[in-house]
Length: 133
Image (cartoon, rainbow, N blue to C red; front, side):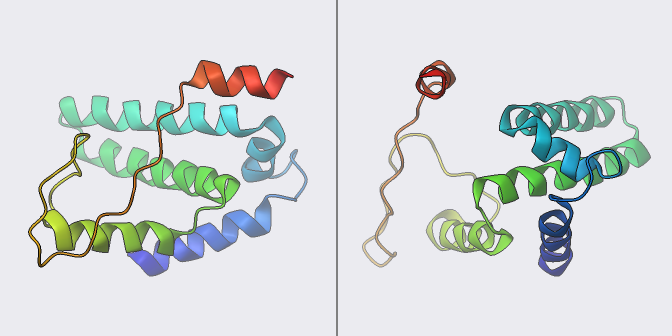
């Protein structure tokens, strides 16, 4: 799977500077990060709705759209799929791969690698206010 995401990521990078009239990826880049984030959120909601409705084929289709939009946002943010896989591996060593990292600090056994400091959470209003100046 990671090879497919890497190929998708590379294709996104190659398409970002194409003609926006002919490329959805170029059009998303032209519209900016906020539009990319909105499209990602829309696809995530569609996957969730289709899952609740029990429509497996729609979940598959919308999941592909979700991964595409996630790859576009990653590329825009300078995040590579390998960066995400490294984080998944780090989490697997700490809590197991099927667990999400909790928001509050976790007591880690002394045999586990040291925790990486978490970035502070910044409210969107604060980020937008800085960009307007």
